[in-house]
Length: 168
Image (cartoon, rainbow, N blue to C red; front, side, top):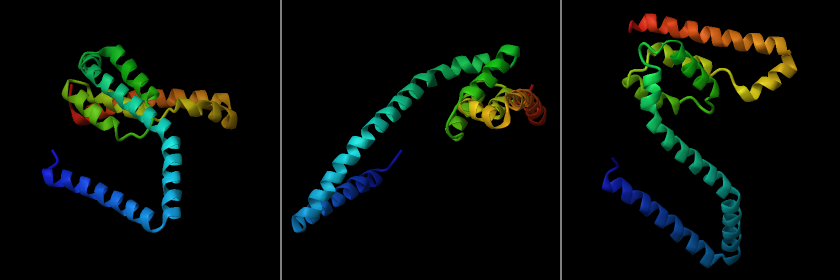
């Protein structure tokens, strides 16, 4: 939780920046008008991106309630279905990896097997949008073989991690 002092500092900084803009606009009106016009253009350009980010945040918030069910599907004794869910989710996941760590930690606390968490992380190396490009440059055979090997080694990697961690 942020302290009251830290919260006030943010508002003070915002107020200081607004005051600085007002002073510049008062002393140099043409410079101030150009700054405001640039700000308007920037808002128009960034508004769709912000809407998309808020949409993704909303969707993430919706799916965080699903972690309990996913943890049950990938828990101890989940069998083949757990492997399919973990590897499939790994293949479908995109973006940077660091947002996935808290989700996996939460799922591990709810009973997810370490093997399936490792398989999820390993299967993330398959990037669906890049498969056509890889097939174009290296050939379809190479792309298919590499993808199958990544899937196979995600299972091996998960099995190995579970043996090293020692959880059954």
